[in-house]
Length: 400
Ligand SMILES: Cc1ncc(COP(=O)(O)O)c(C=O)c1O
Image 1: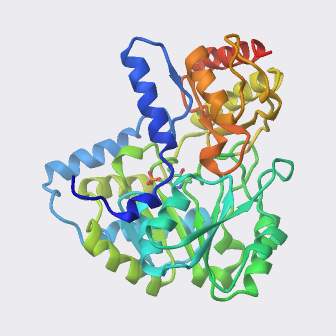
Image 2 (image 1 turned 90 degrees about the horizontal axis):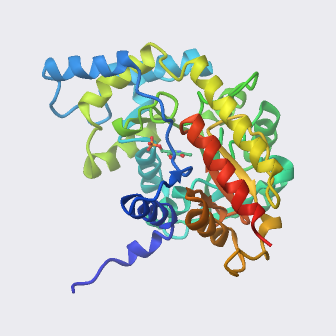
Image 3 (image 1 turned 120 degrees about the vertical axis):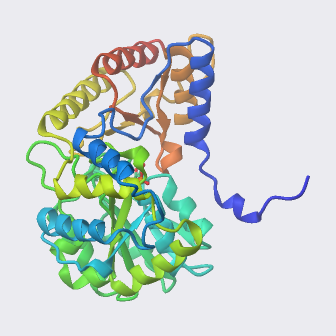
């Protein structure tokens, strides 16, 4: 067979897709597997957004869009950044792309040379290190700790900076921990970054609208305007507007960076789907992010799942303030044996056991760079979530 590229070996994070294909194999074989490993809200895209897409199709808005995105969408993104984040951007500082993921890819492609380092706080969204490697860079993992609420500490950031550091990635609310960075956390990181003017900062705000109670979302550019020229905001409609399948993200940053990212986009995908862009204009203009009732449902599910995990022998977790994940510590389950005599040696082994004995799919912490944990996504129907958590509890109680 003709050969494959060596670049392919950059993609080491096959974990999520492996698990998902195992789940669908089991489901096809008739097993009632509950997938608590999904990365999307189980709510429908708002009616007004769907109607806007239908209108766009009927009006024949089905041709290529301008490379950086439709002007009205870029304006809507500027107004959103002003309204929600008190930030001033102009249209030429915005690019629309095929999901937040492509914004990140374009940014690294435009700035990372072979050997350049990107600081990735762990646990991390599994795509970050792969995207860094695909673009020729080296991911530098900076660990956070559960007892510090998985917040990157300024000393840890400082210790990981070298002359080769090109980017720092920040992600709040966080996938996989649900942690939300407060003003103070961001201020302390900003003071470190001020001494390193050659580092770009990627602020992945995609879960911005999914915060609970009186938690306020704040983004770095808001509290450190002096850093905004080298901060790239990555945002989009996927999570906060229940629009994962529309594939619509946007980046906001220095116009020179945005221009280079558009250049990358020109040869990779061109602009994102025109119909999705018209839908996104309505979503952003009308502020159609998840409703308070939907956030209340997520909040209640978080409490439900966390309560069951915390009463389960061998497991414990926090009550994070955002996104729709809990990161469950399973250190005390390791070393125990399953009813059929297998020893649980790692978080991955525990996840395999939960899949085969409890019909529940959760993602091992090894996929996110911090073990031994598993990520549980509670963006599923409440009754199904409750039943799946009970099955996790029973399976863990059966360990000896
Ligand atoms: C932290 C984080 N950033 C960005 C994305 C990308 O989202 P999309 O490409 O769907 O806009 C995701 C999706 O899982 C995510 O979890």
